[in-house]
Length: 298
Image (cartoon, rainbow, N blue to C red; front, top):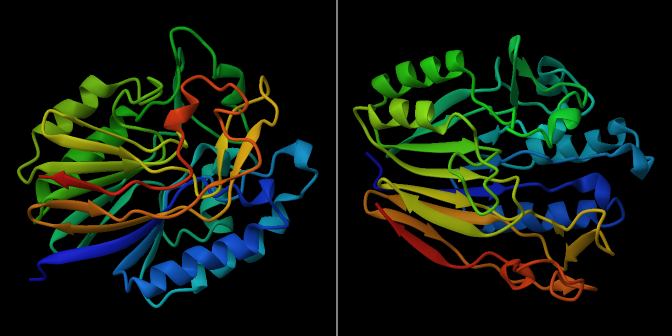
């Protein structure tokens, strides 16, 4: 059995927001992952994000998606992000983005760990769980109490069965956070989720997500929860100008796992133009344009 595994993770690349820089920034990630000789590559969701205001057809994202999927000699995995559901049903998105899987949640082994990809792109409405598709979740984004995001009970049951068969300690991948997080924007049925993971024969040691565009890690009940920053930007929103603070270099996670813990390698980077501090974003100093070095002991 191998004693360690190394992988490269890219989150929230949002390539359609920066069409003039996107290919160069993707090339930076591809070069880094190859240089590090990783065992696999994973996209944590929101690769394209072609908002209608960009006036960029979704089809324009396809060449870079195909380039990402074909660039490596190691396995490439995908997590479904909320913006992968802006122009498609989930089934259509799997095909367009080249997931290579039958569903939006699945698992795989890379010794000495078991990896699980989860899908939290669901609303919980009076009629039951409703999947994100064709931007239907937007109108529910600010409901109180929140109706998004959720992992449905049937997916949690699948997770329970998958973890029961796992031969190794488990790492979880998701787009949305599986703990409350910095913004309290994680999954809403966390108690049910914890009941499942805490009953696993081989323990869950780490959960990695995107979505939040902020470098943030916390340990809760012996599980590390790590948010990887966006590959390209800190998104401030329409209340601020500019609405997006761009990074000078592509950001990504190079993560090495062994039985003792996870090592996240530091990257380099800075902001192009105004930073979150410059535009007066709350706690703007927290939004670093690079990945900080960290060691998460299991």
